[in-house]
Image 1 (tube, one colour):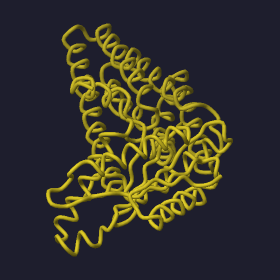
Image 2 (cartoon, helix red, strand yellow):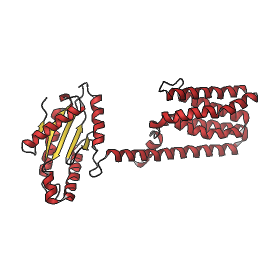
Image 3 (cartoon, one colour):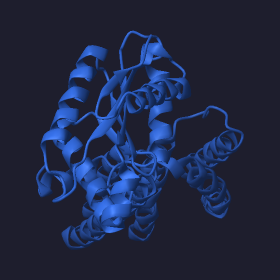
Image 4 (cartoon, one colour):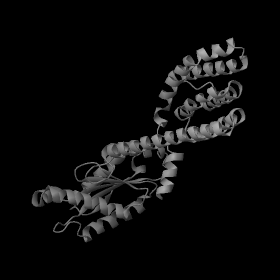
Length: 336
């Protein structure tokens, strides 16, 4: 993906607040419902009954939705309806009360991104930008309309830049939490999550998934003879070689000192066996680290052998240990 395409994807689709949206919406809904009360009363006292009724309706909906979220119940009204009503009230207030009501457009932009998925927030933000600018053009003329448009556009840009940075930081933290720092392979924590996930999705047996447990032969002897720096280089070279052979959808994990697991989704056992044998031959034939002979033993298990995630891994481990007992530098497939 090009840098421009990557930037566009982050600005348009990535949703850094998705995991926190319900918590934000609860606090924002209850706080807004209370904050808007004086303005509702002012509109009624000033005879602007229609405007006051609109804001009062929004208050009630916000309070009820906040209560529903707090109690983990379905929303009475989707948030996009509430946001649309709020934006419509702002546009009407600008037309009825004048320029000073336009200040409400700025917190409304933030509310869009706080309570709506990012794609929806873009649409509602642009809608408010165009409509408020048009209302300003109608009541105050081109100069004020251009100022309003520029200020709201800058606010939208700043919101999206900040959300983009937050999204990048989230991804960086996830990579650090899920990646083995030495080799760059995924770690045991991520392996457990992925194994449970794929086993749950395909436990019906309609799709075959394969698990390849890989262990470096005589790794302790390599460390003792050549030093830990060489041992680290061997681990990194093993990951590099496997990555050169695996598919984009296959996932490589380091789950122990010299033990790795290659998860092959939607792969038949006989195809996985060919991959394993090809890897074994590549390790045997290549000089991964100068002066060090590296071979590997592998145990292969298909999901239908045991649909339980831990039993599935245990089957691959058992096959791996059988390969080591059988002389190492070989591939053993778990028996069904």
